[in-house]
Image (tube, helix red, strand yellow):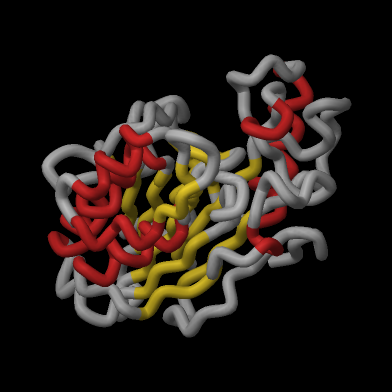
Amino acid sequence: MMLPAAWMVPDWPAPPNVRAACTTRAGGVSAAPYDSLNLGDHVGDDPDRVSQNRAIFQQAIGARPVFLRQVHGSRTVRLTSDTPDGTEADGCITTDAGLACTIMVADCLPVLFASADGCAVAAAHAGWRGLAGGGGRGVLESVCDALRQQGDLAGAFAWLGPCIGPEAFEVGPEVKAAFEAHDIGASSLFNGHAEGKWLADLPGLARRRLAALGITQVYGNDGSRAWCTVSNPSRFFSHRRDRVSGRFAASIWLV
């Protein structure tokens, strides 16, 4: 696997047959404001350039990335060789080698999972709506249920990719209330900001949910500025910062 130096590779003790990568803006053919490796086909970029970018990505990782139609929900699908791009879901899992569970983002949090025995990998698109879910069940719970069906969830690994950081994610009271409705302790991850507004720690909220699910081996995004999509315009796409923006991707697959 020969990845561009500008891309990210998780630093975690996942099983040896697990591979993962997270793209940045670098390495593609799209023109501004989608420069250059935009993988989103729904953001106004030239379709031919998006197709070229996706081909670059697939060749680099040596696996077929399955691009979902993400709707900020909690549905998880099992990927097989017949799963088409555009399948509606915000989580995915596979036990098939050569298929990459792939999440596209431009501020939301991508979460990658690997079972301890290396038999299954999964990915989740965790914006605040999908993370909060309803009744305390969101996309992380959905993905973990799917992983549990493949075996014991104990010892599973999770990696959090880049997302909007806790210094930039201004939200209204309804977002805070959505998390507190299930977990009053989540209030510690919201800091008062402007009148009636809060700054939310999205990776912190995800870590809290993962801990409640029994996943304690969590790596990647620690909420620092280096991981913030808004604060690093030359490296990451950000919808909140730019409004018109490309999408980068986090993928995980078995070999």
